[in-house]
Image (cartoon, rainbow, N blue to C red; front, top):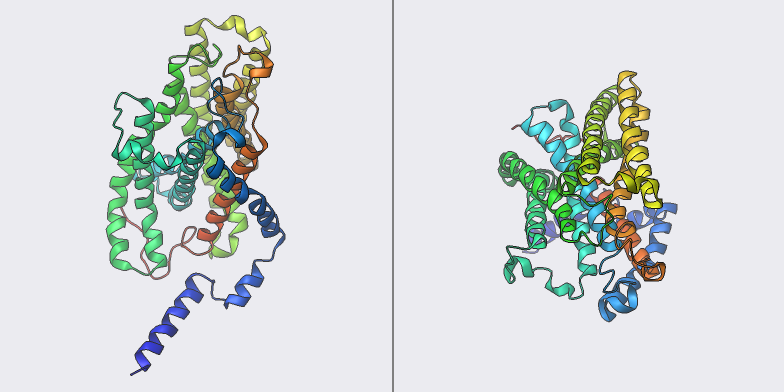
Length: 412
């Protein structure tokens, strides 16, 4: 009578060992985690988790430098605005693979979707800490239907897009769990989720820029324009492209053991193709910025301190990378494409911080300007660390970089 129970228990133990502990015993798995990288992670978490608890227990006042003049800081400027822009790879690669039929980029789809999903998820988590009443984050979904509010639109767009990315990621989850029926269902749903996700991305990336349209008296004239929504969307497309380049470079080095047939030449060719797309997007974005200057007639501000900062952003992080991407593609230099991808990603972060913090409330005296509290910085680092660890945990277990041997490759 006990044999079926024992067999079920052994089967469950084997499942946990294979799926969770990577084929190791619990003791072996714990031992394998004693690495220098994990030691740094442990220190960050030991410091960061108490800060998170303190923020939730005692509110924004003691844990931030936010004020009536500066109601948002790096949790919005960096965690939300930068995180969402750099997590756009999912919709960019999804569009290329599933809508434009560019199948040579297909192996980048799952990593891009995973990166995008986690980027959006942790941006929402960061937003939770920024809200004074964090427990009211679902209000736009079920209570407060402020259809005239840009933030209401952003909340719904981000929530729906996160759901679309989950649908796109589900085939990998069900392959990992060996659930073939559910996997077939979500493979068929991928194309619809991609189409809906592209529409949502166009809306919420531009809607994040639309928030700044409401505050012309606070944002410096060089960064304020009625073209902000278009700027935010175009720069997010560039962000998605360059983060796909960076992610593919990092993944193919860190998780190279997962790729049975690794063709560096194929990766280089795809990287050059992404570099071409990045160059075109950055040139388009640069000329949009010039049109904004002309339309607002803000040329006179260029010969000021903020003007020099603006020129560093637009010339150093947009125009120069656009030319170097083009040069790298013409001369087949994938290493230069990867280097410029990092520079461009830094430039997008710089742009979002300029909009939300550096050039925001630019007219206030120095003593009234916003500078992050140390707890804000620690909490941000903690969230990023947890996001990286989550990405690593999933990559080590699920078929993200490779085709599962028990399943046919996905077909549209």
